[in-house]
Each structure stands twice: as structure tokens, then as C-alpha cells.
Image 1 (cartoon, rainbow, N blue to C red):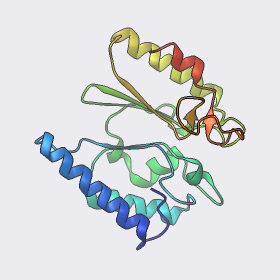
Image 2: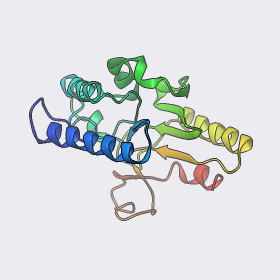
Image 3: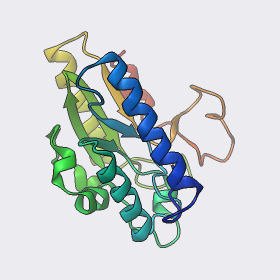
Image 4: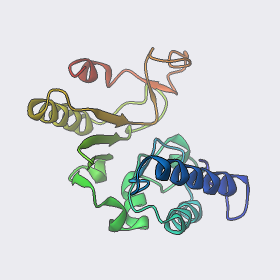
Length: 191
């Protein structure tokens, strides 16, 4: 999304995207859009002013559940936009579908919407293989184990900004800035 300011292309494009999503959802479900999920780069440089613009856009859209995880732009420069910061800024009402918020300060959350699980995690840093903290990795493994034990056929969507190494175009670039290998062993246990 890369929100840069109040009245610029990033704002108008995001506003248009939200409108398109709501219209499309209403065609298929009388209740409309249940939630939006964003896998990073919500703000362009992670400044509080950009996060506030994002929050106002979501507030004005009427969407009541936002699942997000910050990206590298949310952490750049004088950025403050960690997962915890977004939650504190936007308010608890946007996180009513969280079933596990114990790891939010460390960059992980678990939401369930209409019986579908969403796990959102952020790395400890960008670059150098985008490592995740041991706490987040342990939480991810434990959470996936619990979900699949309860329902082996459950769909689980995992959102994170860095790509999983060697899974799509660009996920094998040599500098290690855009991908991670930290999640491969855990994810391979839960097909």
C-alpha cells in the first residue's frame, strides 16, 4: 500500500481498492466483506503520520476487521510501525477475531474468521535471511500443531512480508533481503 501522505496516489489507490473489495464481496455474500489482510508495507516509511492516515482510511471504509503484518517499509527510517503499534493506533475493535494475542508484542497473531485460521508473523529484522525470533518460530510451530490436531483438513493462511525461499519468482535473490529460510522446516511439517 505504501501510504505516503494524506492526499496522494497511495491514498486514492488504497481507497479505490477497499471499495472494489467491498463491491466484489457484496456480490457473493449478503454480509459483504468480513475482513482484509495485508502482508506488509502498509506505510511507506512507517511514520506515525502514515499509520494514522491508513487508520483513517480503514475507519472511513467501514471494514471492522483488519489483519496485517508489517513489512520492511513499515520498519524503515524513523519507523514505529510494528504489529503492536498498529494495534495500539487502530484500536482493539479491529482485532475482535483474534483468538491468540499473547505474542502481539513479539510480532505474531492468530485470527479465526468464519472458521478459517489466519496466522500473521513478522521477522525480527529485514536483510540477512529475514530471521524470525525463536519465540515466534516456537509459537508458529505450536499453533500449527494445535490447529491441525483439532482439524487435519483446516485451511490455515500464513501472512508474512518476506517470501519463503525458493517458492516464487524473486524468492531466491542472492542478497537475502527479500526471503527467509527460517519458516521452511516448520511449514513443511503442515502441508
